[in-house]
Length: 615
Ligand code: GDP
Image (cartoon, rainbow, N blue to C red):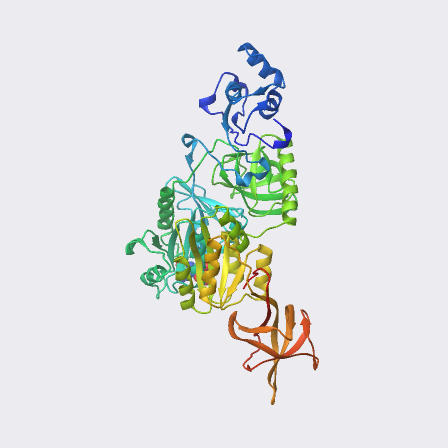
């Protein structure tokens, strides 16, 4: 195998499968699947399988085949040699070992075993997520271990009816989204906590959006049923408006009434999780080298880098060599949430590991390898790739990408987030856009709500590869910066028709340069000066970009456009000026508009003939 084609036997298994077991394989403890893409030489195969070339040559010689170290082996011989030396084999397009996130594991179904579900708890603030997590964590009634969890490692397992459930410890959708925006998906089931006395609230809806965008089933835990004002039926009715339809209303979402505080019906909730888990048929192959995701990581004063790894496939054994993110190391010591040393972690098991060379990041993927030098080479290469990528970071999905990918015929879903000035227009935009769905391309509006564009929208977009469309609303400077950082595209429109036309053009793969309005900058109104003959002058601070005297302007209040027009004058310390840059104060007067208020944002723009960049 040529060194430069990065082909490695990624799918090696801890146990040699019986199908390929031969006498010789008994001496090879770690056989596995040799994945290759085409004809290779004897010496390349010997390196890849870690068998000496002379052994291969001897084997073929005894079969009456004369070959040398440089002879090229065809598929048949590769297969024969693999089987002889205790490896299964598979010919396929190579996924570079450096790229193991992309690896599609194609396990033999007979090797797959059921694995516990991984559950994240979400819901509106104060609806009882933390209380529920604690209630589950410390409940002994269903747990073989006495005395709850003793080590916080970011996740823990509970056992009910002999079946395990893995809970992610960080409630809320922030961690969930952060993982997804890094391309990692760890959650199989979302438990949506809704307080029975409060009902569906904004973060309840956000959590629903996130779960749906990730395609993860929801179980609704209607909490605080011990409270006098508890009204579970109202919660169910409210949820229906967000397409979460409970079983009693003919839908397929299980709802469970609980009291996290009084520890009522926690068992019922766990049983519901098992039901959903069973339907989802969650499986993994425990007989392969482990792969999974970092849930959290830190630098321990005494033990060095420490990380909680969630094993998602395979089995992690202590002593295995690991590539985690861009670092490598050895799973020197593994402990579970009870601070007990464990020697192996099977699929869906969270385990705290020490022995890594660096502290990885939450959301980093890891993979175990047989030998240290391989892990080291792959980690080094991943670091180089990451650095190269950082230099040329491209957007999650820009409109340009969309055009290109549609042209190439390799996009079938367009994910959009719609933010509008009212719920009515958000719904109207959503409905009009969804109508554009064709046989080839589906328009998915993953969120359509009223209000300015916020960081939460950007995070959802980053996680779901979505484009954000603002309809008569704007992001603030902070959200814009976040969007830039996450490379999320925000498109702003004022006319539904223009918005629809743009998406239609994208779907047809046409990118027309158009006259566009380019945002120049934003200023925040900090003080008002009423001047009798002139009107109200806004004492402003330019917080982003530049404001020009000839700019078109929009007045934004809470992210919503309340006025559009032109500046009548722009001043710095009583002198009229042509422009004022970010970080400077200015006074401005808007033509025919005096109703500015402190806290308003004045956004300046000009018409440009460039390619669209947001309007
Ligand atoms: P989080 O913000 O969603 O994590 O909510 P918390 O778990 O911090 O709970 C918020 C408040 O609700 C706390 O004062 C809890 O004691 C209370 N709470 C949580 N669950 C229940 C419950 O089942 N019944 C009652 N009465 N109060 C609860």
